[in-house]
Image (cartoon, rainbow, N blue to C red; front, side):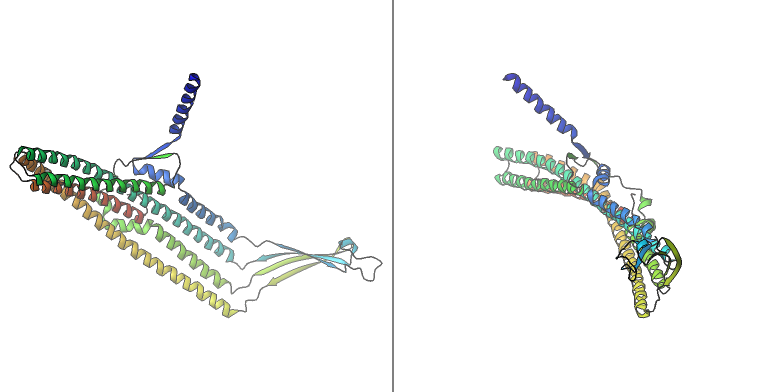
Length: 421
């Protein structure tokens, strides 16, 4: 019995180790998350499939229509002949076979292929826009999660410091040098900070859940907490004129708009060619009994008489082209405005980080140390300790927020310029 229990325990341990080995660990750095999402996210895979399907429509769009084979059987009842009805060509009055091929007017096939090609380019640009949107969400969520974790760490440090202050306040009260109010206020502050910590931990868990959703909720994958933020690019790369040039050249939404305009232009040309007829050519051998008795050639064209209908189609094509151009202008104005706003926000966040890290934070730390030492020696009031501790908390919060804002603005800028900086 004992040996059986040992065997079962060994098997359970082996199964657990196998499950752990099969579990993939990703994260820690945002690049790891982006690589995983690019390879395995279902929505991005669907966008790629849409683009490939649109590309597959190019060749059929310019292909000739399928030829037509028609068979006509004559005198199948064999009237006047000493024979019964039949459908076999040698046993009836005759049969005619017509093989015909429709030929669009010159240029129509090329234009149809170009219209389909523009649609494929639009689908390709939309797939890239979808990836940039997903990548931006991953970058934003990563930055937010990093901010949460760093804020939690600072909150815990401040909580430990506040507990130390509370011990000092209780010791001073027990010794008759402090008031009971100081000890109570210290405990109240601790409870408030513990509440903030619980909320931050909840927000961190929510950010982790959002990240897993952005990755497509993969199985057997464990997310490593964010370890570090991406370094910011050089200042020269963040100059607004240079970014605007890169946006005009690489923005996925503008590329989709350009492809839509190109497709509308080719479609307008195609509609104009509908004023010219298509041609159908055919050849018809006629069989009488067991021999071909005659050959016929056929030439057929459609006559474009419905001019009102064609004028309406041309007007529709012209208006669609105009709408595509106007939407492109509007999209360009919007993304350029959003780019300027994001660059300004990034510059503000950089300046705020410089001010906090270079001045406010060191001063808050020195002030707290000085006030805390004075309070321990009875040369400062408890309210001064609280004020100094809150100033330190505020400075740390501002610093973490400024760094997180920089990452979020950078992600937005990269989405608009269409590439990593």
